[in-house]
Length: 69
Image 1 (tube, rainbow, N blue to C red):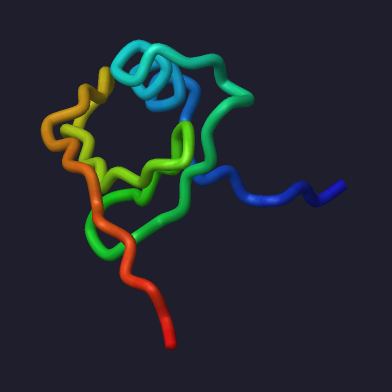
Image 2: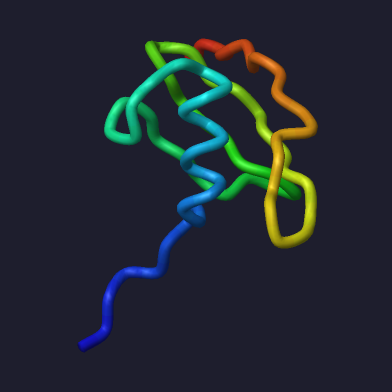
């Protein structure tokens, strides 16, 4: 009856797959501040999408991991 809320739309998933050359089951995305945190092939990227009917990636930058003590 009630499903889990989707983080990304189908069009956003397709844009990520095209940008990072991966399949839809090869990445993980989490809502992060005003964009998304996308993990692909042991790297993390901060991604922002344009608004509107057909979202496009307008910002994608690799994030450096910080080791916790």
